[in-house]
Length: 497
Image 1 (cartoon, rainbow, N blue to C red):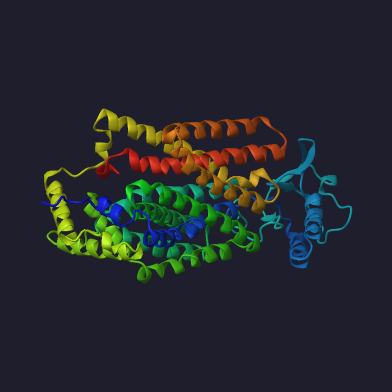
Image 2 (cartoon, rainbow, N blue to C red):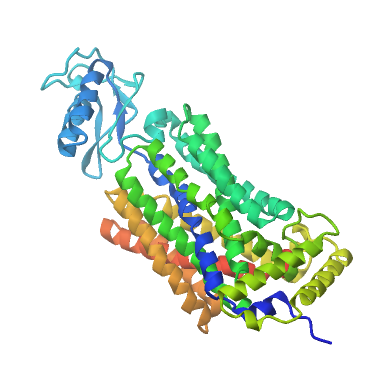
């Protein structure tokens, strides 16, 4: 009797990572470009800008500064708005430099027109909160969520709240995408997430209030992480076991490229609404992948590998349809890799027997739940360890990525450098995990180095040195994050992933 070949064994015969899989892998990885743009968007759309209290009598003249000088001469623009600030805003000394209050102004009757030599401090020492709005320094950003909805002073926390809501969406989407994939398959979940991310992102760009913006930012978070997780799982299933580290690195590499693209877009698009719309429109070409690639077949065949996350829309008793799908995709993959002659002659029967064994296991095995991750001592240790690692990696990675503005004078340059650092960091993962240090010691060493780098920046005053050390930390935490994704897929049994 001919031995039954497992799905991965058949992939070994026709090519674990041939041209057919590489083409599909690259197409799926395209989804990570706009996904990265959505994730890092807060750096620019909720950027903190210098601001101070507006004086109603002078506001028309301040507006003229913007229209007359902003696009042609930044220095003239800053000189124009600063003369009004210097005349009305209390000042103080900070670090040897003169700074101006951002939430109070002198409480006095201001002249209808500003004139040279006028200082409100000559008439009063009393101050009042910004009861007539704010003036914003628009030299870097023409419009942000902060400047449009006045998220400053007492409402400053709302800008950070919107980003917290976005990552709350990540939490919801991480659970929701897996549940939806169990019901309708990963392929449908992948394109459903792309569609909804586009709809909610585009809708968000028309927000008329802060909470309108914040709610849709949350919804974008739900489906943004769904895109990333589905693409990560799909590309790792396209190839054989010995090659899965490569698509596992291709996804974060694509994320890095997407972040760099965002930095370039943001440099030329200084209005948050237009930047969000352009990023949303970048999702549309991904929908063209539906007729171009047969991802559904790949997603469906995962059931043949013993995973219970495949396309289950056919219902009980219809698994023969899944066998036919698996046969078609294996033939197509073999043709793309020019190894059709390597397929077993009894391929259909082999797949049918695999599916029978899989169905029998499902009938005789209790469904696995999240509780099973803590059921045995070994799994409990692994789960707790990974929970801590995910927390630490996420905290450091996003902490550094979302606060690049604090590392230099030009937000766009520092953000681009921060994103570019990720590319070689991800490439480094390949030799690291194949070296004698392996995954575990590489992960530990990278985390330790990243931690030391971040800790060191607290004791350095030189801005260039801080930037270099912070980027060293970003390099290490990026590589650590990528290893963690791969490690998390490998460390658990298939049924628990």
